[in-house]
Length: 320
Image (cartoon, rainbow, N blue to C red; front, side, top):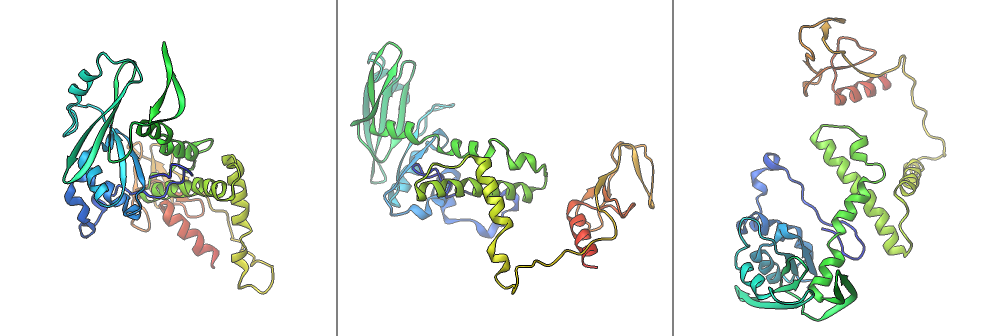
């Protein structure tokens, strides 16, 4: 979830799949996957009377009703996939707007589990836009919008908010990927590292947005902010808070260079010697028993190491 005003991403949930312990099952899961996800992500907003704007992937009326019971209101875009969402009579709504001019608005009220809701509709040139919502009115607001051959008109409140803030998640992802994406540059296939790369890049974007929002200055370009962040990390004053002088300890020099290398195709190890192989990419278990790989350190031919074992190997050599 992103803040509609600042753009800061403040809530997320990792898809762990089978890695998630069964003991972490949440009470909200009893409402189903979609509703449970909404309730978990919005826990920090319960009782705040804030508004949540959702795309069509969350157009489950039961979810909006449960959020309203928790003191969080919202709207969700309605789209027909195989069927219309439950409680939504989409075909009847389309027939109602069939002969109306573009820009016409209307709403249908309802009540579910003691909570009032509305389906707000607006006629577009080639379809009828529908939003299920537990807040808002048909009062028009914002700038006048143009449609081909139609006089400019204003959006009703719920539609205006949808168009105003629906792009925040996409904008945050674009800032994370452009112009240089850490996730692409760091070509790792390890699940933990991929998640860490995402979290690191997301934090970087959040820091830039927070600096802009709370200081009141335009956000820096991504590369400029990254340079400033790198400079601050390199000269972090907290590193020297327990050191009497400004001199940093010198790193011990190693006796030889270390490079993580990969065997060429159709080769394998026989002791410390590289010999031909009938297989294209034969693999062996790394020294730490983490996974099968074809990589090794240039100082230790014949000893197979994954990236984790290689990092530990360098630390051990440097400490000698």
